[in-house]
Image (cartoon, rainbow, N blue to C red; front, side, top):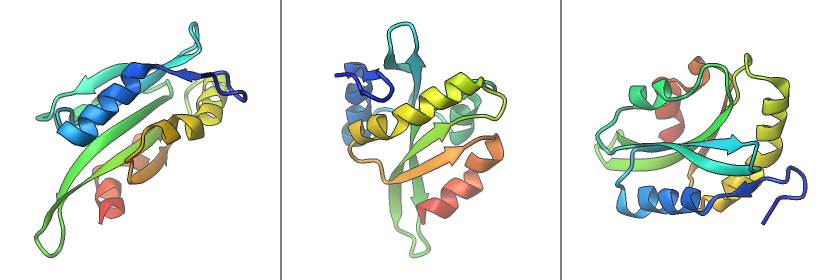
Length: 139
């Protein structure tokens, strides 16, 4: 079903992989990309559970927009193991204006498809999604 404002459909694999990450915890992260030819959000990369946050940030292209989810494990001040699922809208300043507009107009609808995201983050350069920021938003 296409979104009237952006015409962007969401591929079933996106929801399937997200459910696997959320329920089975068999992925650390998922990077999503808008395929402009088919007007659909698709899965670009899936990170295995043993991959790190650095592996995740390295998989984000420097000059192109992406959506991503990251399953962040952390320990609270009370020494309790927790995890939170982050939704990150990556829109680097160096990406094409058309691309930024497309990702911005499709974000809310796509985000609603991913039921279970706990923290949402918008980043335009790597410092805005540094591990310190992720930790700060998780607690």
